[in-house]
Length: 384
Image 1 (cartoon, rainbow, N blue to C red):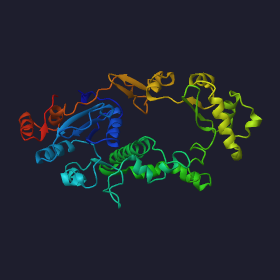
Image 2 (cartoon, rainbow, N blue to C red; image 1 turned 60 degrees about the vertical axis):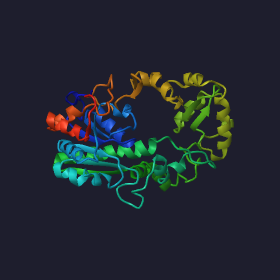
Image 3 (tube, rainbow, N blue to C red; image 1 turned 180 degrees about the vertical axis):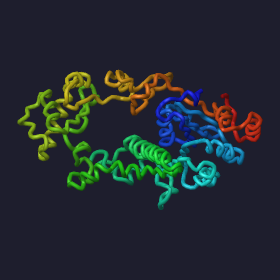
Image 4 (tube, rainbow, N blue to C red; image 1 turned 90 degrees about the vertical axis):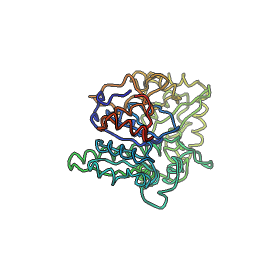
């Protein structure tokens, strides 16, 4: 069980209410908990996703928000909270009685964080969607993959977590700073589509300089350049080549058995097909581990392509304790690292509904009141 009084870190003393969901909202809550916030998850009755890595450092209570008593209990928690995170469609929390207006009525200083795909307004705001849909509408998805083939989804890292969680967090932290000056709360409208558009700033900048095309596999960073792509090795694995700068490119070429004159200039567009083929042939002559040994410690920007299990064990990550094996889970270390916050050595994952008594007690509710909530079915009592 996570003890809220034992929390440390730069956000210690900040209470966050997280309405249970999946993806970007819970991940934002994880990062806030990692930084010391007391994150209380309002779970729903019944099944759903089991608690996993994004449940670490949090507490949980199960409230049936279809019942008025549960809504009243949640508003009591809101009255003491600093932040609320919700990832439902626009208007849902208002209909439940816990929208921004209702919450600000009991706590004017609350930061109300809203995580959606399409935003709180706009013609598509009430449509369903997933990461692949949001990034398809921003130009990101169209830029990924091989020319002449369908775009390839980059997991759900770009939309859900890059355009979603990170921008939700930015808004929440900015609003907390603002509240420190004004004493007033705020509403954060974090839309994955908006955040992903923002992530495209570099591409828009390059395009404005005439250095980016809408066509796939036609740009410096999309696999078109021989010096920025992956190559298969003799054992069917891969090396990632990213030597953009001329000095890094030279460092790579020094370690490859390739005739420099035959290869041609790094930025010779007419020679790219030949250069791709030459690099494919040479990387296929050795295993991934052999190539890693050749390029280790150099500025060639050539590295092995690892799966997530290999990545956790690799010395470059292991020596920094970047990923910890803790029970059944591989846990990424707290990031970013602050000089005043020690690295984590253990992560405790919330048990669904396991903290109801302490959470409600801290909200000022007595044991008889909690018993009444349980009897009414507003609270599902799991072991604290």
